[in-house]
Picture 1: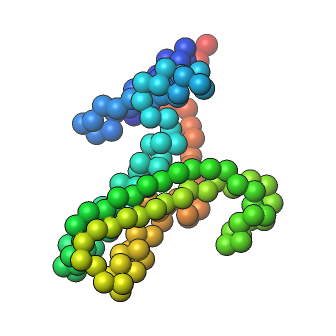
Picture 2: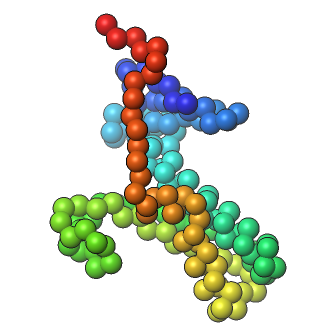
Length: 142
């Protein structure tokens, strides 16, 4: 659940038993009390990628020690994206860099990179997404 005042960007987030805060930076009119929405999106993808790699390595007894996933988001011109189907307008691009330490051979490293792209959040973000927006049942309309 997300709840906030219409007077600021600051949002209170309840995710299960965890309480988080989201906000915008001061430069965008926020108070910088927490990550912005895109940081949460990137965090979700990064966490899922790292967990998926780690799970696979444990199951296959691959000598992986640590995983670091660095991410960034940008907007690019579709025409500049050779591997993209869309060729007009702007696209969102997420750069994901995966660093793994351990006694990995080239085959193990390649397999773990392949597995990284199979994390559930990655698959969700590259698939068609249907978002159904509706008013709450007890909406307070004037």
